[in-house]
Length: 108
Image (cartoon, rainbow, N blue to C red):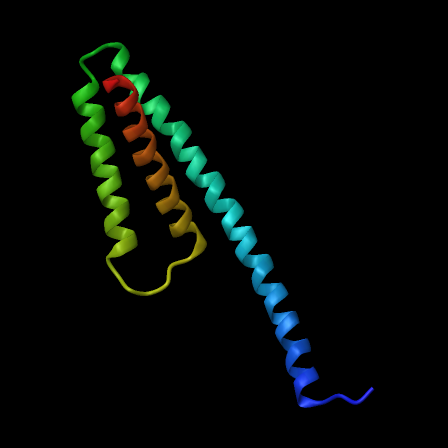
């Protein structure tokens, strides 16, 4: 079979797409696990300090400080960060989302 420029382009495109798709699916899976782990951690963060009743303000201030610190790290520069920073950001998003869901459960 004759190898034309079009066939070379398509073979290169398919190989490149499959390698990028593999890495993006790997990052997507890790990101979803990190998001769900953050949601799980938020359930513990909202129930454990609330048992005594006097640790609520301190726990809330520590959670807000940690979330703001992660946001400062992630969003301070425009450069592309590694997978670990993205996983930390997904964990932060999961914790924030879980706390909002718990607040809506308590409010209803």
